[in-house]
Image (cartoon, rainbow over all chains, first blue to last red):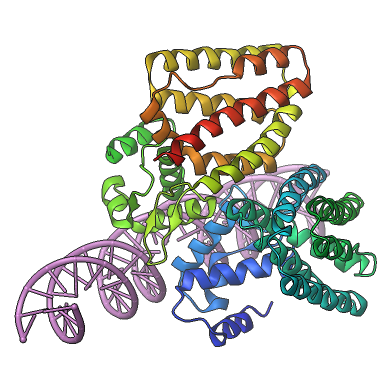
Length: 227
Length: 227
DNA sequence: CAGGGGAAAATTTGATCATATTGTGATCGC
DNA sequence: GCGATCACAATATGATCAAATTTTCCCCTG
């Protein structure tokens, strides 16, 4: 929905001479990660060429990239759709996210200045407001931004790629869960993370990150199994 | 080198009407993982269309997928090349591989029948022969096949994807190391893995896998830092 | 005579290619 | 050494072909 709108926005925003296939990739990526596309929903090339106003080659390339990312799945009959997670998928993700993102948090801890920690705390404050307002879209974006900002300081591009790949996979399902249960019940261990960061205590930061992840994912697992 | 040869082979082998972009992807993926392409070597679209005998659209799609896999890197000026690992990259990979692949081993242990363990042991025997013969290409393929076969029994597609992504990233560099030091010095904890599998001891399987990974990766790290 | 099953046509979507356009790097002249 | 021009490679589009799904219509059966 409103795919054309997004294109217009991306044209206005300060993008200078980025190739079209990159634009399409970023646009679709955001739509998937923040749940604008429903799990199970089919994604067609021609539909995107029409709504985005670009040729089919850039669209095809963007779709291929997203398939390799695990953000889209190839359904055999050369149909592509947004993946729907199973219970066992969530279990694997809990394990992988805790392993990788705890390590990213640990590595980031000693690299962050006071100002950078403050910036992180400000993101969390805005996040609280979205939860209070029941703004699901805002919550998804800011929650991702919080973790992304933290992990960026770990200076570990490969681990970062792995983490991003996982976020991309559970994004659509998380949206569904939030839509069903609202934002009130969402856990938020971010206060603990920020506090541990100020103390420069890598172990506590990693532990708090793991708890944040586990609570969020368990909630999702529960919601998916009762669907 | 010999890109046309590979195409011919893939046409002969039992592939029935797989789309060309999938073929190209598989071909390039194998060439990267098993080190037929040297790190730092530029990859051009037109070069591949000529050597593979297909149009540029399938080639473009395959390259995009491999970039998302981390198997190729986009060098900014719309140049694409095989990545060259840095020390810190190897450090991240050691952590991620041990975390993910140990878990895969653990999960696979109780799922494997006696016959399947025997098949794994046979792969390892063939592997020993390639080491004795100094057959680097054969070693890379069989080593991968050993781990891949083991992990396939874990029934964990997401963790499997993550592991494959990592293998794809260090493949070219591993080839370089093997080429420099030969196959004699390569570690092989596979005997321990098989033995622990026969005992149905998940913890020992995981431990042996972690040791196998650590030894191999440390060797690679040492070789890369002295280059 | 009505309802359901199946086959064939039509529409929709995907895959590939050929071509035009644009941007980048290199070379040659000043 | 610096700047303009030239050549080449990548990007993007539209056209064309192939495959799959859906729809429709006819025939058979109850």
